[in-house]
Length: 222
Image (tube, rainbow, N blue to C red; front, side, top):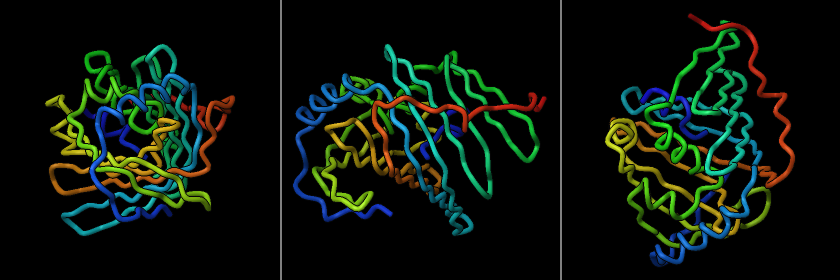
């Protein structure tokens, strides 16, 4: 499941949670909003916490996602320390390391559905997709301060149904705008106690995507 680790989601302050939400109503709302979802582009900040050494690695970058006929195309560009560019499409991921000027390729043929269900958590997941791949707890509505405004979101806690994915991910917390099927904040919890916290801002929804910043050049690393 190394490809899942590469594609883990890549500020925003949560208010006090209200009463638990209605899972059926939440999934129905996501079915409606995901049907309107075509693409999203955003900037992101990530905090990668390693429990063993009590270390925080901070990253920032840009990302896009395109959803068409249930399939995902995703680009992730990390700036600064640990810079790299990752692309995923047609069941294959390429992970480019600019320091080495080469890229590794990973095939998701045997786990394409699982990988795409993971990628969809950030942008465009339908309620049916979530229910098929994750055990869902609806923790209720909250409000996030993003891009200078308050956005109503639903906080969801997800446990992967796929055993291979559970080896890497214990559970995922999502703060999702049900009107757009866009998650503005995610925390991925690993079995080791490590976490990855991603916050998204400057989201451009259903606009033409400029893929040029995500272009991968160079040669295969092996």
